[in-house]
Length: 321
Length: 247
Ligand SMILES: Cc1cc2nc3c(=O)[nH]c(=O)nc-3n(C[C@H](O)[C@H](O)[C@H](O)COP(=O)(O)OP(=O)(O)OC[C@H]3O[C@@H](n4cnc5c(N)ncnc54)[C@H](O)[C@@H]3O)c2cc1C
Ligand SMILES: Nc1ncnc2c1ncn2[C@@H]1O[C@H](COP(=O)(O)O)[C@@H](O)[C@H]1O
Image (cartoon, rainbow over all chains, first blue to last red; front, side):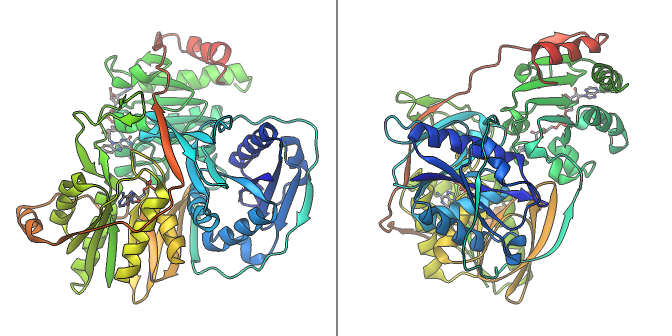
């Protein structure tokens, strides 16, 4: 028996969300007295054996050129084969777009119950129950899985990464890789930016910024913190900012360590995407803005004055002024 | 072309979230039910647009739920769509629901099956992928744009930090998100027509139940906001560094 973790890559590097999934899977394996193994598809530049320090004992790698582009149908077959081969009783993925595409397919293939968006380790003392987010982060549900094999997708930033000594054994895996039916024609991606869903710190701004020409101070604050930038929905709708920055009920759901909301009123649909952030800071000129009720820290003031001061104070703190 | 649009029922986005029966059931008291926004604004409207462009297109709606989902289906029919199928099963297990949808899809031999990105109550993001695997079809999640050319679909989908354009053969399963279409409101003619459109009720096929919700809870409440004076921004940064340890 084992816990099998799918290791996701982006641009040939292992994603931070996967390190979290590995630590989560390793802890579960330790709890159950089994081992944690990984599966990685395609080439990667990082040192795989080094993933042992996160708790992996063994990594199964299938490295064929056909796997360089992600195709859920093709990937799911190989992961299912690996799960059967390692006798995995639990398969862990990240609750990323890739994980959300793969996990349901695996669930059907392995006849394994799926809990998506897990936020805590499973309770295994009495059955197998996992807490997941429901109602867009406004509540959680404990979900019991009744099948012998279980699948969990772990929310990014929901489980801490920790390291110790250890090397993983990397073993090539034999698999028949088919060509996928989905053909990628074009990829448009902002390169070099911190991916929003994985970012530790997110600086977000709303209609209070008055227009796209004023985003410079928001970006400078984000840069000073190595943060990702986000926005409210009307801002994306008005094309002031790209759609992939839109957070909330109809945008991305995020859970960074720190969320700084500038000129955002804090409508319930906005909160639905950010309410799992650990620390929330609100900068708004209206003391009655609903966002203050959901915040940990706040400044009632004009963003155009407060934000540059904040950037300066952070640069001073970090010694980069 | 034949299109199947999955329609699910969710509480309104502003609904109060509370639980009853020793935190094992969602408190439906006073809750306003709506069509899941992703199903209504994006999937269904895009399907209607495809039919407007090619009137030979047939749109069927499917929902897996008890009789109390019928007002939602009627509203979806008022927006557009030719007929609806309700599979008479209430379940919080994604697999059991997906199996019913796959069965309907198989019988109807659809070219396209639309789901929403996720339900805003269960947040599973699972049904589309499960249906696709059950039917051995390709599945594109988080689709923001769809064009059909003969038997090929060209789709834009969200990826982290951007967008990707891809191409897939029909039949195809999609999950739709923002960008796919613009929300519409039903007009009087649509509402009148919906009253007489067929709404078939079908009994479920036998399905294994993989998962069950055993209890619910609310996250701990925030302690309350600590306000810092606008003239003292350095103090905020100090608190974030020393107290919250967030920077
Ligand atoms: C079904 C549904 C889904 C939705 N999904 C989303 C979603 O996913 N994400 C989302 O964000 N919204 C969503 N919305 C919209 C949401 O209800 C709000 O309308 C939206 O979040 C408001 O955006 P905002 O806070 O930027 O703008 P506003 O509500 O206009 O707020 C602007 C704020 O800026 C402040 N301000 C103005 N000038 C300054 C200044 N100089 N300095 C500091 N503060 C200033 C104002 O006091 C105000 O609080 C959804 C709505 C519905 C009905
Ligand atoms: N009971 C249901 N009946 C019909 N379609 C559903 C049902 N539940 C979910 N769906 C569809 O699947 C999508 C994703 O749901 P979920 O996987 O639960 O987040 C929804 O947006 C709907 O399109």
